[in-house]
Image (cartoon, rainbow, N blue to C red):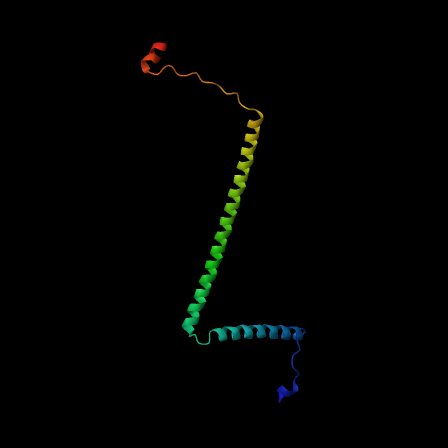
Length: 121
């Protein structure tokens, strides 16, 4: 009898909490429904193996993407280095074109044998 005569407790933010809880519950139910539709014919062990496989594939994908990013960075660095070398070579070639070197004619070596070389000294 006391239950019927007492008033229920009122919370200050009851409406917000109810709507938030309802929204969370709906999303959980929808996620479970999607999962159940996809795995209705799978046993518990099969579902566990599938989850492990999915987790492994997710890790593998993450690792491969990280490695590909590192490889791209290294290639960019190599290309940047080649560009710098190319500019340096262009600079030296243009300087040589501006200031051509005088060709030095070499005298023919008349000292062919060791004996002739010894006589010279």
